[in-house]
Image (cartoon, rainbow, N blue to C red; front, side, top):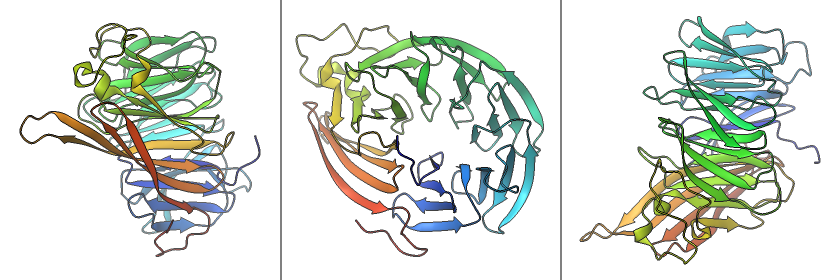
Length: 366
């Protein structure tokens, strides 16, 4: 894979802002408008994590200069332009996650749980070798879970409750090692993909039961990102971006209410959240072919979801969503998705702009 100008990309906890970093510095954008809100050109960063829309960032340098060590985490205030605190580690920091109460730091063989306000270490978790810093985190305080790989040979995940600092469960999701995982924002569901990338599985966190399995494709592919749509209960949509250049959309909301759409003859069993099912009917799987260049790393999130219902019968007429995609060759894309009651997907590219050429106070145009 060719080298990319983007070193890292991240959305904040409610997907209202996102950050990208290059060898020259990092930039923060408003997701809704595409406006560049903040930039700092002081060298490369491999991690830029936001705390909602606050002025607090957690940043880790790329190591191209002594002041930007990959072993140093800096809590940075964008309003004052000053470092608030620094935490130093013996090995490179591979991932950082935050909510309003907790700060999570992922190293190759350890995960540290801090109280965000006092920076007191609350827990140290020994992990299997985790060279890519793979993790998933739910920012919800009521169900604040951290998921980490449990094995280097199979696709198992350990889930920790980081508010109570205890191990919640282990989920055995795949035969091959994990490549991607995400927790829903409410902490209720976890989606996983293995290094094979052919099956996406969704588990209910509370009792570690498998709720859904989706076949992405027959041939192996690297899953770059997984994203649930925002929801207070079962998310309506799950998106996956892959090395094939396609983005896959799985309609969980319709799958959980199969009576809403016409079942095909291959429908496998009743679909109830929490029930164990085989691979679901392909009707719940949609593909945006060639959405991004094949082989280019991408990060897709479901930004907004709106269910359109009939005013008189409350029958679901359509599910509409906005999906945002960052490509590591330097572009932002926003897709408008609509899935009707017959489970037919229509989509259109709403916006696209170059992340590297937008200037401060300029609203990005397509």
